[in-house]
Structure formats: structure tokens, C-alpha cells
Amino acid sequence: MKKLLVLGAFALLGSAVSAQEGFKLGGHIGIPVADASDVSSFTLGVDAAYMWNITKGLDLGVASGYSHFFGKDNFDDFGFIPVAVSGKYKFSGAPIFVGLDLGYAISVKDGVDGGFYAQPKFGYQMSKGELYIGYQSISNRRDFGWYRETLTVGAVNIGYNFYLR
Image (cartoon, rainbow, N blue to C red; front, side, top):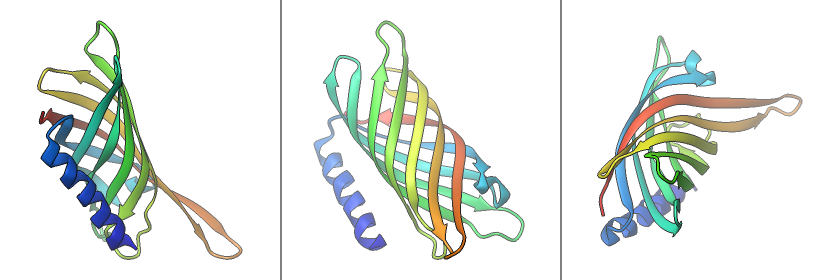
């Protein structure tokens, strides 16, 4: 199932790349927080999205990418591929925006579950790109019969996306 979801995400982004309208590509670096801070020292990743302008100031689209969490001490590295719906609101008369990505994060490491993905963002709009700070959160539940546990893998990221229109 994971392989099918990953293939679908890349097929969706592959079709967006050929259109070259509203496509953005970039990267981010971050500090792990929540449960991830116990097992990871920092995170690096790539971002990709295809956005459509719905109305003045409001863009909606699809987003994906990859976030790699580098393990610390005796913990292994792990990563996620988010598949999300993305929204962005640009304020009139100011070069700032707020955004939100919501979807599912697919784990690329055996033994680590994927889960609900959310990333609110605040950023600065430029003519050729955008600089943002965001809080990436991946949460899932594990059911051990008599015990249910909720884990949150999070990171505070700073990133830059180039517009490829």
C-alpha cells in the first residue's frame, strides 16, 4: 500500500511538472520537536507543490516532498513523504502570506508508521520565490490492545521555494 501511495504522489507531481504553471520547488531545514526531539537531531527536506489561483489572494493546490530526520545517539534516521492539499492566503498590500498543508505522511522506514500530516506556514513573498517558517506535524495512534498511544513527529522548519512558472 505504501508503494502505491508513493507512486501516486510522484505521478501527480510529475504531471504538474510538465504543465509548469503554478509549480514551486524548494527545500527546508528544521529542528525536531515533540516526540521526534528524543530521537532526532535535525531535519532536511525538499518541498514541491502545484498551486491554482482560486480568487485574489487565495491559492489552493497539492503538495508533497520528503522530510529526512537524522537520528541521534543510537537511533536510526527516518523520513516521510507527505501527500497533502495545500492552501495559501496572500495579504493584500503586504508581501506576507499564511498557508496550511493537510494530508497524510507516508513513512519510508519499516517500523515507523505514517500518519495525519499538517503544516501551518507563515512567510514572505518574493517575485521568484517564497521564504517561510512552518511547524510540520505528523501524528498517528498505536493500539496495543489495552493501551493506546499517540505519537507526534514534529519539526519547526525554515524553507525557501522557487516558482517554476
